[in-house]
Length: 604
Image 1 (spheres, helix red, strand yellow):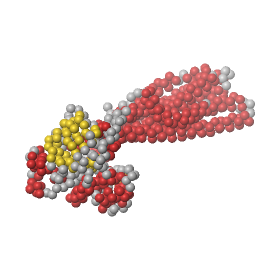
Image 2 (image 1 turned 60 degrees about the horizontal axis):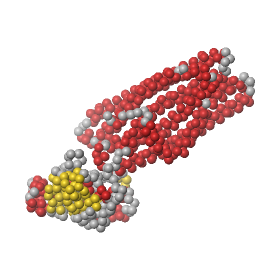
Image 3 (image 1 turned 180 degrees about the horizontal axis):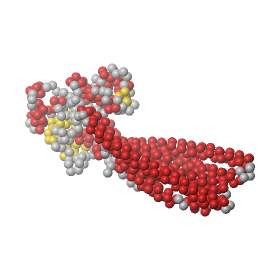
Image 4 (image 1 turned 30 degrees about the vertical axis):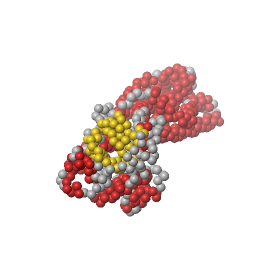
């Protein structure tokens, strides 16, 4: 069952206590809002009683001055009630927005700390729902749920107390319809609960379907699936509409039913109360006041029943949010942090074993060493563990056995931010953010000024196309860099790496999907970025790594060979076979090919 389909309990004290904890910093605002609600509820009791006084005392006595005073008091009561309601609404709405800001920032911060393994298991769309949809549901609880229920309950108790105080016999007659209200409310709550769950389920399916189809629009158009996808979405959308129509039916029955019961109560009050008036056992003003109170009595009952949905959804949303916030951060900085030698930089893998799925190791007892300034390439078939080595080195995952050290210090004992600051990662699939060219080079680090950004762009030959753009460094970049070519995005990624001046450069195969001219620019940019830095390059095309200081050959998670290009060819092992497979069509041409600089390829 999908998370959005599970509603859980209508009320969970543990969850509610945790939710109310977010109001603690704003307790003064909450106390003020509650005070205004109590005052407003008390004022709601006054108009019917003022009507009673007018009818029983001032109209029979033809006291115009007293009538005027009561009318002024009645009007003043209405204005005061308006002021209290305004103050309560403004206070709770603004407080709710502050709470939502705090909650969203807490979720966003926690998402940033979670390790990559968590994102392997959880779809991004579902996580976005936590930050948006679920938080919005809680906003309704804070702004119009908890406080409104408290106000409705106070109003109900107040009206019941006044009715009993005025005439307990007539009050019992008015309360005789309460069992009918209880039955109608229970029917409404039970059916609306299921209807609410069904609507949420179809909303979740609509979101999932839209996200998948919009992301894959080009594939849909290429394979001419528009009609099929339209029909499939039509089925989902119609089911969502039907679920909402079913929900509307329950509301359409509930509110008229409450009004009918209210009319029945009024009829009983007129019948019994009218008889008592004729017997002079009850004043006419009291009868009129009873009728007005009965009308006000059933309104909070309707509101409280509707707030049941808010409470139901809030409990489900809070459970999902807290499950996310309670997810432990598995990869984090230790309490006692060690520092590696800032002048060294020896990277060592010592009998490292790792698996994404338990019992299926991706790396098996891998050991090697990378000295400062050395250029090392990782080669091997897809799935041999090349990208996993980089993921472990950057602590996107932690090793299961063995250890990875920098200058003899286990990276698990280092500060996580300091560790990752040592590396510059240039991936094949460059991720650019919405913003400007300069923003995507400095990534929010204000210490990298505009002159440094331009210098980095010039060094990697990116300034040539940036300078031609209308805004230069301030040119807007669309989502995912969709307005830039693959080569332009790749050059920007090199400029980003150069601007941050990392000690170790990790490269993906950057020239695999660009034209020849751009490839030459990227290779020259690589020479600039790699100069004086330790470099680890993951490569599939062996022609790009022939002049590396050392080449590590991985096969099925094991380090099988290590050496220079010529040494590995002479050994006539795995590397020699890979080389022959890549250049079997024109081996002589391949052997005469001039060495190129290393890049990195896709994930393996």
